[in-house]
Length: 610
Image 1: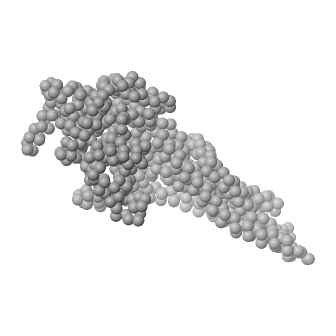
Image 2: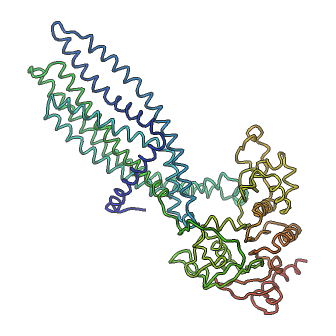
Image 3: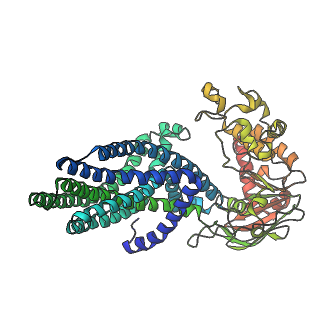
């Protein structure tokens, strides 16, 4: 992904200002006192070499002069040397403290901002995910922003002091040294911009490399990788992504080598010219020996200060450009408009979809096309249809992970857009086909469904019993406190890591049901393929439990197994994003439409199997 230089400069300048403001605010908020002390120590560290150079000049001049007294300046040199030696240790300590504090706050703000996104669209956008990954890396490098700030301030002080010293001795040489430094500053600024753009461009390679690495080392794909013998193929792809990133870095390194090599030679040439002038001037009596010493220290100091300042400015720009990804995430507007006040009323009438159309992007096909549907209060409505019919998308709209492209969804007459998302979702419980398996304890896996139940053993066990998983959890090594993972060490598990247990697919399915049941008396229960991982006997048991649980509740059922939805109050058949037919099980069979055809196909399959 290449960015035209003009566009990169325009966007970079605007974002750079926002990045600098955010960085300063973050550092100030994280450690105000430490930051002030750090800046004072940085100034003292920058002043020490200047003081040492002048004290050296005084000592040399007094040594060469008759009856010169050197005790005072010599003592000053000793004290300055001690200070110069001690300050860097303290500065590093403060830098680390500030970096940890700021990094912790930056991480909290970043993930709070990600959570601030209302729906799913940003997390299905590769560009946003690239930026989010770079922002996460940036939170661990906040201390580098402290370096840039300290380097710039210290460099300015050192440069001012040494330029003043050099001006006293030779204005002409001062101008020459400064002019020689300008190309270095411009080159470093350009190079830092190019490196920042390069890092943004190659992030896609690193994310794909990470994807392949997770496949090769994770348990989820381990069986298929070994059975199908595709490890070498995936590894080759992973290395190819790294090779592309390395090639981009190599091109950038070559640019820096050419530019910095030439600038180093220019600095050495200027220093050589200055040395020749100083020696000649001293030989002719225009400079004292102390002046020569001071001149050499000033030239070297100016060049070092310019190099440090250039590096600080260029490095600071690079760090701020990298920090723009963090700023972009924390300042991003929510992907969906969000009502801040009010709540979701208790459902008393029902949910209505009015002429709902939806597609995931302007260039994407329509997933839903003019859907009109009512889910009456206290009734069970089932959605059936082939893959891609729009069932899961409709569920996402009901949970307000997306807004309809056209049309409205009403909750007791209130548009979902006018209800705060958190309040709406607090009225909904759900089991999804792609349910989560949290690498946490058994109790936590259930309690995450309602955090108020996290420490309520009675509620956790009650939900587990309704889902038919209590007996299995109770017999685990530590009962509900048993970690359901062998990937991480959790709590006391660090002393005995073999206690981690991995459940079967059907047991995880029941745990997901328990997580939904622990939410208690919610207004809407969404059951999306809740028995897909269960054997026939367990499936029958679970459906019996769910029928009991949802009795009198408003519920939406989604299943490819039509026998699982036959007792729903209404069955809605989706086809091509539209409602093809709806009615009771018996009425749809009598109509002889798509539902009747699919039901008979499944029934025939069971008879043939028998």
